[in-house]
Amino acid sequence: MDVRFVDLDQAAPDEAVVVIDVLRAFTVQPWMVARGAARILGVAEADHAVALRDGPLPDALLAGEYGGRPLPGFDLGNSPTEVAATDLTGVTLVHRTSAGTQGLARTVGSGIVLAASFVNAGATATVLQRRGTQRVTFVVTGASLGRDGDEDLAAAELIAARLRGEDPDPASYLARVAPSDAGRNFAPDGPDWAPPGDLALACEVDRFVLGLEVTPVPDLDAVESRVVRID
Image 1 (spheres, rainbow, N blue to C red):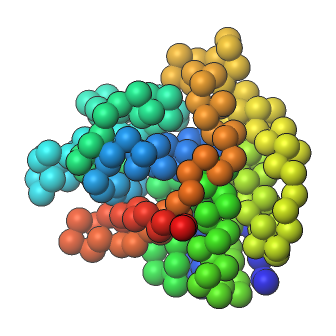
Image 2: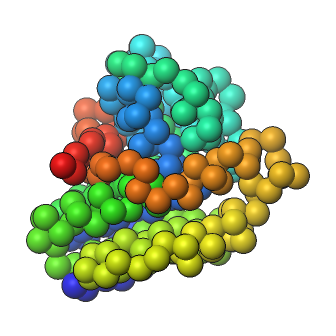
Image 3: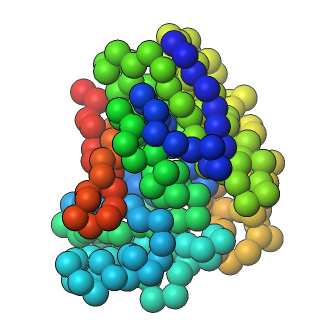
């Protein structure tokens, strides 16, 4: 298995790409699925999300953030705590974030793209194993905007270990989340957009037994995260 790790600036199409965003985009997306979302579309720009809702997707809800803060006019932020408490049955969501959905947009054209975090780490490894993947690039999206991204690198390293057939204790990987540059925002005295509950939900390893395979939707200039069930 040929495995490499790149930051967001280096993200590009490859044979197989796993885009990691622990805090918080790809902790949020599995929760969207769990709360009943019918469709999850990712876009790079907030204006494009609004244009989709004002045009071809009038019933869509908008979710996302800029610099961590919920976007004005959006229905939801990027908080798994918020999403976990929201009924999304049958809803189409358009999701824009500062790191995770940027990574998806930059890797369109890959043989396979998966969106991942700790909450679906095992399922992500299983999808890649079943596809017979020989080369995997992990995009550590948190390593952008001057941040260290260690929470995302930790999740990527755990998934890579599982790809190699190892079964490491997740505790040492999870221990890197709270002290990371992003993780420190979620302390009890952190900003109002960063509830400590988000950190706890982001550290629930394998809560969801599903992969998220991301495919382009050219007519909407977006990508769609589609569930791959692991039975």
